[in-house]
Image 1 (tube, rainbow, N blue to C red):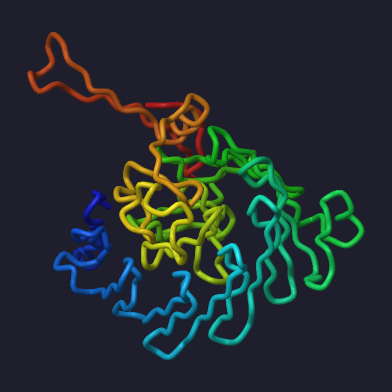
Image 2: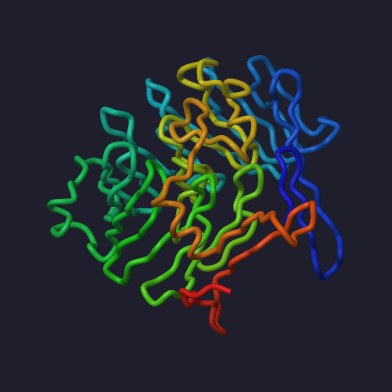
Length: 332
């Protein structure tokens, strides 16, 4: 795969064909998937109205309230008074509901009779666990979870460098998480060094390829948590739609966030992130996040000096793996 800010090229080795995915913007900042920018229709305020796959409707506040796919499937979205998404009604009429704390952090997601509870450490998720959907009662705390919840489902997340997850702790085992230069998780290993999960995103943040269970690590771009039930990423103050490359709600701080439009994610997904769903920011790799990446991927040097061609040379230390593809801790 070759990725730039404008286009992703996927090579099919079997058919020797290439698939091009553009990330084109017009003068306003509206996003398109084709080079000629004719595949989408935008309305006032950069509201996405139509793509080749669906049509979209909004309320007076600019929140997405309905998506009608060309096959007739209809998704409906509801919101609290503060603009946070409260419910999604899927095409089969099943509902996914959400609850938040006073700081706007999501603390519960209910779907198909199960509730996922979230316990936060500042702006990152510390714990999550499952229980039966008790929508008519107050949320259970993690302290009394042993009485009503399945503790086997308890997951503890460890974060380094802000929003970059570094470990997943469960009663079945502990797992190390490897992230790329932007802090996006790309691989996970168990305590024996076996790779149990991997994922690769395209320039829209969609999971293009993965191994293992897709939601084993639910984090995508920094600050984003994938809800596979609804196809959206929870991004703290808004929800991001990786199929469209836009948010479902307008930016709560308006254009002060520095994003292309009121619905747009960062202009350059190779260089910028938006952990809060509010404003673009750069990301500098720290020592804690660089070390596991080097162990998993190796390191590359540019070299110059006597005996080296004028254009310079390259030296790569690659991590050695055994016949099963597991890391050995040595380099070549």
